[in-house]
Amino acid sequence: MKWKDIPDSARQKLLSLYESGNSLDNAAVTLGINSETLRRRLREYRYQAEMTRKIESGDFDFSFISSRKWNDYLVLEADDLMVISDLELPDTDEAVLQAFLMTAIRYNIRRMVILGDGTAQDQHGLSTWLSTWKDSESIDFGGVFGILNRLIRLLLECFDEIYYVSGNHDQRIAKVTNGQVHMGLLLQHFGGRVHFSQYRRMYLKTSRGTIGLFHQSNFSANGLSLSRKMYNVEPGFDGKKLSAIVVAHIHHWSCGKSDDNLAGCYSLGCARAPERTQYLNETPSTHSQWSQGFMRIQNGFIHNYDLHETDWDEVLGEYAKGLLFHRPLVKTQRIPD
Ligand SMILES: [Fe+2]
Image 1 (cartoon, helix red, strand yellow):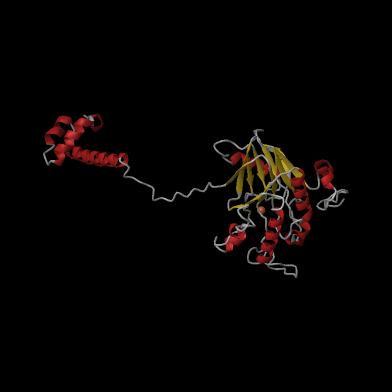
Image 2 (cartoon, rainbow, N blue to C red):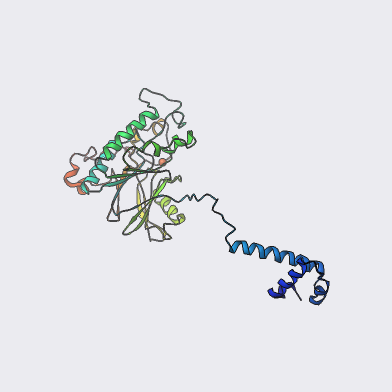
């Protein structure tokens, strides 16, 4: 007889015999099993029975393992949200900010997100870009942060709450301080109205589905192709695919649909002024021209604006009159004919 064919009740009797020191030779002959093999099988059986009892009685308690989960993203349940990214203070373009604010006011949207790179943090020590070229306009991190504080105070006059998602620039201060200092610590004094996330993403749950908002590290000169790729690999939220995905960071405006045609795919223009960007103007670049813009999400529908390609009279009506950027269009980013 093979060990696997011996019933449990018989195994227990054999184990009792073994443990009381009796010979198993006769039993081994009866079963047709080598007596040494039978003793080994009984030791294994005893060990497995003991371990099974421990598991069933809860003796294997794993509660000492950290319960930290890396999925505590910012999640907002709302149908209306203004989205702006890549302000990269102090090099932000006031024209983008103004159009952004006027749109929020015109459409009465009271929540906004800075989808990464609120600050440039191009200072020497935080970035290697500028170590070769100092001028009298250069400011330190304290100066940049002072400007961010003033901007947030101003924005809080129009918005009830601001969400701030980390971008690669925002993380530079955390990198050089080994995480001891990060933007979140510096944004704590706004009475809980500024919500910071060290993650480079957040989710907006709307009545039309969940929109993923990302300041991903991936770069592409083509925003639509990047957002489609991100959508394909992003697992979604609450076990469901996203209804739309929005990517920042690449300074390239685009609108489209996913390869499966089920989700909206968008990339955001930036709020940085190209002409104030030293590294962009210091040497020729093979990258495509930047777009400038921002996004309005209202009733769960997405309106992605390119500052230079939007009919602001149509979007803002009376509110367009005072815009810094207004007709006649000055396409500062276009290569001249
Ligand atoms: Fe970025």
